[in-house]
Every structure is written in structure tokens, then in C-alpha cells.
Image (cartoon, rainbow, N blue to C red; front, side):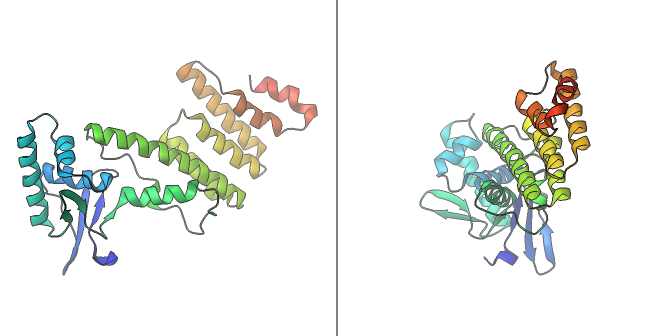
Amino acid sequence: MEAAQAPRVALLDGFALEVHGAGGVTALDDLPRGAQRLIAHLGLCGRPGRGAIAGQLWPDVPEDHAQGSLRSALWRVQKAVPGLVDVSGGALALAAGVRVDVREFTDWARRVLDPTVAVGTGATPDVALRGELLPGWYDDWVLLERERLRQLRMHALEALADKLAAAGRYGEAVQAAYAAVRTEPLRESAHRAVVRVHLAEGNIAEAVRAYTAFRDLLGSELGVGPTAQMTELIVRSYVPVRRTAVRAATR
């Protein structure tokens, strides 16, 4: 399939399937749930065997019933979008060229996390800031992948903030850091990224304000304080003669 005309599967913020036709892009919103689950599984798991797919998607029924459900779901998918699924050698996969937002996000995150790759000149892609994987789906294979992607997003946004700050793009850096904070408000490493960006820009007052807000949040929610690692970020930003006062303020 040509990339411009290939179907696109969205799994972040909910399932969606878009296909190109003579009338433009069409969103297929009425696929049966079994067909949606098959497409989603293939978008996440690559090229599993038929038995593995049937066992994952229909774990609570006998094997022959699971295989029958898989055949029915595959028939419905191929009827709705011919050629969407490649069937070969007892394994299934989305056809070459089919775009999947999770794969696009994963590729972006790996580039951001690679210390040898410089930050790009473009804006942060939308796929990096979207919500959770398949909200409302509670299959084990979804839950595991959801948590993996959540962790990957957090680490990527924190790394992006540091890279942007090092490149002098402080406005974008602080936005990336706060995107990480919004994703997980009690995650200290995300708040440390905010503090580092403010310090890199020379905004000590903003850094102290961010530290204090996080300290108060931790105290009210968990009854604990920031780690010494975070406190030291603030302490190191002051000249030695003022460190005693700063340490007192961060207690």
C-alpha cells in the first residue's frame, strides 16, 4: 500500500480506523467489537500466530470456539477493509504500510530517548501527547501495553524537556516537562524536569515555586517530602552564602 493511501489505526484515546477512498477519508466507526479487538491486537503485537491470537482475545472459551471467533472476526475485518490483514503461514499481521499511532509514538519516543539523536526542529507531534491506550478496555494484553506506553511517554517527555532546554528552546522545554507532570502529577522526576528547565533559563524564582508546589502536593497527598535529589537541585542554584536559608525553606 502507498503510505498516503494506507489505512490508519488509532489506539490512543480510543479505537478508530480510517481508510482512503474515492470520496476521501472515511472513519469506520461501526466495526463489531471482535473485529476491533483483532485489529488492535495486531497493531500492538506484530505478527502473532493464530493460536496465540485466539487465546489472547477469547481466553475464557474452549480452543475450538476461540478459533471460530477468530475466523469470524477476520472475515468481518477483511470484508470491511480488504487487504487490511496479511494472512500467511499460520500468522496474522496488519498489511505493510498500515499506519498505527502506537507505532508512530513508539518510534518518536525511542528517538527522543536516544542520547545520540539531537532534538528535531519541529513541534512535538500530537501522538506524543494523546491519552491512554484504549480507555475502557480491560483485557490483560491491553493493560500491560497501556502501562508500558505510559512509562515510555513519561520518560520521553522528561528527556525531551532536557534536550530542548539544552538547545535553548526553553518555552518548548517547559511545556514538555509540564506535559509529563499532567500525565502523572505525583511523579517526582517529571517535577524535577520542570525545575531543571527553569534553572537552565535562569529563572530561580520559578524553580523554587515549582519545587514548593510539588513539596506541598506530596505532603498533602502522601505525607512525605521530595527526595534529597530534588532538594539539591534548588540548593545548588544558590551561591554558598545563601545555602543555609535555602535549605531551611526546602524543609
